[in-house]
Structures are given as C-alpha cells and as structure tokens.
Image (cartoon, rainbow, N blue to C red; front, side, top):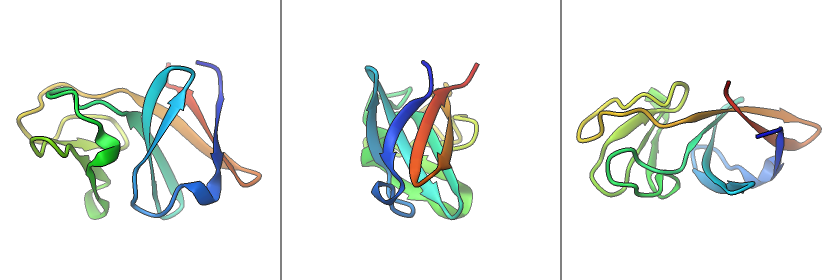
Amino acid sequence: MAEFDAGPSEGFPEASPVRVDADGSEIAVVRLGSRIYAVADCCSHAKASLAEGEVIAEEASIECPRHGATFDLETGEALTLPATASVGTYRATERDGRVYLQAMS
C-alpha cells in the first residue's frame, strides 16, 4: 500500500480507536499523546474489530472487545491470551493537519 491519507488530524481523538478503510485494508488508528498508532483492525484470535475495543493508554495497547486479548500498538504483538499471533502494523505519520498511513515493509 502506498501512503494513504486517512483524514484530518481532528478525526482521531485521544485514546479512542478509529476504523479506517485504506484501499480495502481495515485499520484501527489510535492517538496517544503525540503518537499515532495503526494496526490491522482484526483480532488474530476471534476476528473481531479492534477499533471497537478499549485502548489501554498506559500500556500503549488495545483490547479485543470479544474475548479480551490485548495487542501492543507499536509492534502488533499479542500480549495476552487467547490471542497468540500478532496483528499487522502500519506506519502512521501526521503532517499539515492530516494523518497518513503506510504498510510496514
């Protein structure tokens, strides 16, 4: 995926996941302070939308709403069971009042 314009910066509130459809890829985007994280919007265990889950700001992680598995927002690593597989991550940048996403190589 080439760089994708995910929308205006104000559309990504603090610690509130937002689902973005980036050229057919569903991505959960989360702002924590000055950082913006982006992970695949699909729990590796139960295929639930991570954008519907809760952000754990102090751990920079997101919790699946279905069974409570948590994922590291930086690396996509599964942190708790029942998930054991990581989710994909995306490079997220903010410039000129907009958020841009790009697949990690």
